[in-house]
Length: 392
Image 1 (tube, rainbow, N blue to C red):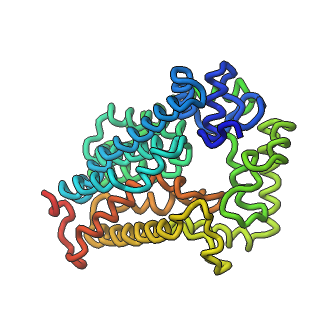
Image 2 (image 1 turned 60 degrees about the horizontal axis):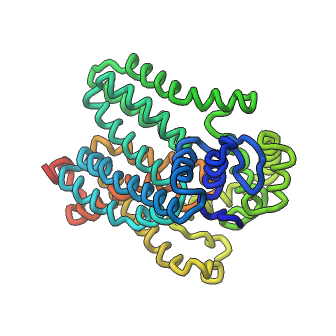
Image 3 (image 1 turned 30 degrees about the vertical axis):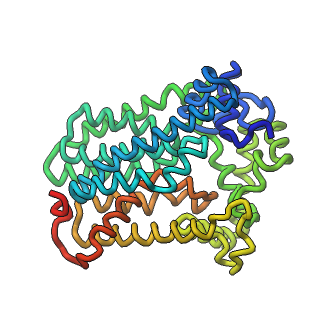
């Protein structure tokens, strides 16, 4: 497949950039300009291709090393987030837990995608949120807005948490009689300014406003057109028919077709859509797909022999995270709502479209912190002491 698993759409776009064709050609043919994904990671990969060669082993080593660096650096915001939430000792233990966290190791060393970069950026934003509520300096607000913009250009899915984290900061400042409206407005301005260059590029290219990326309705359609398989089968990357249609009508027309198709399907089959959304909900938190049919072993992919162990690990992580979140609420931890926002709102889009455990990875740092907190306070029962007292 001409190195297709080497970055998938990201790799194809990066190859086009490195070859001088610009941000284009996300699949198997030269189909022209695209807004298939945010620009940050494809340009990083294109830079690696320019220096170390397109689809070479050297480029693979470099980009996977960068991913591993992004994952390793995530230990820093994990430390500060856990320390500010639950005390010094929890910060240290949580950072070590992230360093050996299996998903953090796997995705950084195996998957050429923006996942690890987005995880790092979102973790930094959680730390920004806490410090803004305690030291609301204008420069920090500006950094908050710019970082949200960069994170959105990496993966716009993170914006599902922007109103909740930003609203939490403003509410806390209002509680303490601090000014919040003006600095929050400044942060919003810098956030939008960060998106302007990419928005102008999209408008000049497609003569239409596109917010970061344009494949939203395709992703919804892939998960809601009658296919009950876990992974996409009717997608330009897996279906010759869909790839030909994409190349024939062009990207925007193709996305418009999928929008009409999925809206009609949802209207005609609401029960089916609800059931599939429930299955994706279960998979997101357990990695278990075969619940409704009752089939398990025969649906495991023989190329993925660790599926049973992964189900056990993922489910245990979820249970421990929920226990830690409950403990945080029982002990009135100041940051408890930030963790709740992450668990509740970030995965919502993936319940409706399609899911994969890597889609959840940007909030895995919060899950790890909560799981460690659950284990560290297991013997304390429902004690009501201040969480910060654990390590201070």
